[in-house]
Structures are given as C-alpha cells and as structure tokens.
Amino acid sequence: MLNDLFMTDALLKLVSDAREKANRHGERFNIFSILRVHRNEAETHSRFLNELLSPQGRHGEGSAFLQQFLDGVLGLQAAGEGPYRVSRELATVEKRRVDIVIESPDIIVGIELKIDAADQQAQLHDYYLELQRRAGGEKHVVLAYLTLDGKSPSAMSLNGLRKEKVVCLSFADEVSRWVEACIEKSQHKPALAHAIQQYQQLIHNLTGKGGTMSNLVAGELNSDVERFKEALEVEKSLPKAKASVQEMFWQELRAALEAQFGITPSVYGGNSIAAISNDYYSKNRNNKHVGIKMTICSLGGRDVCLYVNLYHAIHYGLRVENESGIVVPSPDLREMTRKEVGSGNAVADKEADWLVCYYYNPVAGDDEKIVNFYDFNSAAVDLLDDEVRSTLIADMVAHQAELAAKAKALFSR
Image (cartoon, rainbow, N blue to C red; front, side, top):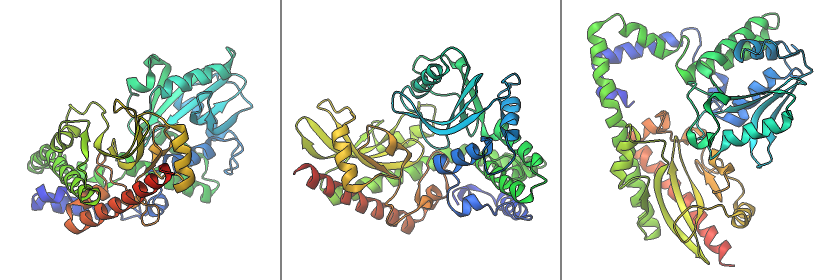
C-alpha cells in the first residue's frame, strides 16, 4: 500500500489491528463491493435509492421510506400526502436526465447524484428549469445535489443559478441517517432490513463513517500523542507521494503511446506532466480536467483525437476538435462511431463531446481496473507495482490503438 512506504512500524501495526477489528463481525463483507458495483452511480446508487423511495417499491412499505426522506432529510413536513410518483432518469428538454424525481400534486423534487462523475456545463441550471417547467407555478420546487461529503456544486454546473436554489446533501450525514431510519422501520422484515444494512455499510465504506477501519484507526491515534505526530508527518507526505505515482503513470503511458503511434501526445491542463500531476493534489487544481491527447485523423476542418483524461478517474476515448483546437460535439461522427464500436463504459460516455469513452477495455477488464487518482483507490495504489502498472498501460494502449484504427477506417470511407 502507498501509506506503508511512509509509516513507522507502530503505525503499520495500528492499521493492521484496525483492519482485523473492522472485519470482526463481517463488516467488510459487502455484496456491492464484492460484485464491484459499489461506485456505480446509475446502476447501484440511483436504482437502490429509487427503489427505497418509491411507494410501489418491492420493499412493500408503501410511502414510509419516502415520507421519512421528505420529512427527515429535506424538511418538507408540509409536503402533502400524495399521491407520489418516483421516477429515474427523467428526460429534460435539453436532453439531459435527472437521476431521481419525486412528484406529487404539491411538490416536485429532483435529485442529482454524484459519486465519481464530474459536474457538467449548466447541468443543475438546466435541471432546475425543467423542474420549474413541470411545476407550472403550482408546485414547490426542490433541487437536491447529493454527493459523498455534501460539497457545493461548481459554478459551471450552476451557470448563474443561485446557490440557495440547491439543497446540498451528503451520503455521509443526511442519507446515512435516513438509511438508518429505514432499517429501523424494516425490523419486521429481516431480509429487507439486512439488504438495507448492506447499503448502509457501503455508504460507510465510501465515506469513512460508522464503524469502519478509518474510525478505528482514528480512535487509536487520538489516545497516543507520538503516533498522532507520526501520522501527521505521513499526512504531509501523501500529496507529494500521490503526485509522484500519477506522474510515473503519465510518463509511461505517454511513452507507450508514442511507441505505438509514432507521435508524442501533447499535455493539456498544465505545462507538463510534472505540473498536472503536482497541481492535481494542490490548491492550483481548480477543478480542471487534465491529461494527454493526440490527433488520429482529420475530416474537413475537424480533427478526431484520442484523449486520455483525468478528473477523478482516468478515462479515455475519441473526441473531435475544431480548427482552433477546441473540443466540440459532433453528433454525426458520434452516431457513426457508436454504430461501429458500441457505447463506452465511462460516465463521460454520456456527454455529447465524446464520440465514445472508456475506463477500460470491456472485453478484458472490469471496474477493479478503474484508476481513480482523486480517491486514490486500490487500482491507483497498485500502480506502485512495476508489473501491474506495465500491464495496465499495455492493455490500455492496445485498446486505444484498436479504437484509433477503427476510427481511421470508419472516417476514411
């Protein structure tokens, strides 16, 4: 592990003991994590929350969970008694999709859920306008922005929408307490209660709340001054250590792409690979997208480019730039590409300015291969291993070469 490189023997033992305690009652056995869907926003979190909120959900508890959410989380005690309709992926006029929408004769609530996905241009602004349009001046409109830690949305997503129009919620606090209340209401149905407990544990694992290993380590550190000081030194060194791992990844990926294509990819989001890696873990990041790119082919004033991009997790694919080098949506090329290669598996694949976008080759990988430099997940830590890093980069470049070859053949017809 990355932390192990900078820990004293005392800290290593503390972490090892905490890991053992955390699993004493099976807390680390989580079905969502085992199935590798623990960070999937659309197919795990959105679906599970929608199922709990829906009065017609298979939980069979009617609107009990929904009322608890409206009252306890959103503070809408006077929301009325329904009837309520809860839906997923509500299409907007702008062809966006609101993750979850709760609607009654008196209210309309839109919930935008973020685990790893980045904010999109004018996303919350457009969602709020859609909710207002559907409300028709006759319903109370609430737009909730749900993240792991309750952070505020970006100015890019708000696009002029006042911050007070958005209710910021966190999985760590508000949703965790609501899920706990749902468990209490489900005690007469053990199977249901256990299923919700599994989701609660998933939230704890993602946020570091509850009886997780992080809490156990914190409890031990709080009782030992010297170990606390040692931990502070480790904390100070981690940003630089993480940046060095990221820089190593970019340098080797760039070299592999140059060897494959005979072209040196250019860096964007900073002056150099060292700069984007170091700035990523500093205050200079400013929510920028960074990465490397190279032109694959040209089509009458448009360049089809291979992008390897980083916001939270590494994702790559094909994008189109205009003559000024600006990424532009190209619906015609996007449709052609997707007919040829299908859809990608990255969250960004839904965005119009990607022809196709992947976290990994779907033929040879799974979610365990998603390298998240923001959370520095296990796949990012594994990059410290020379063989693992070399294999991952080789697999990634092979898939990128395959995409580039298909794009050249497709657009030369």
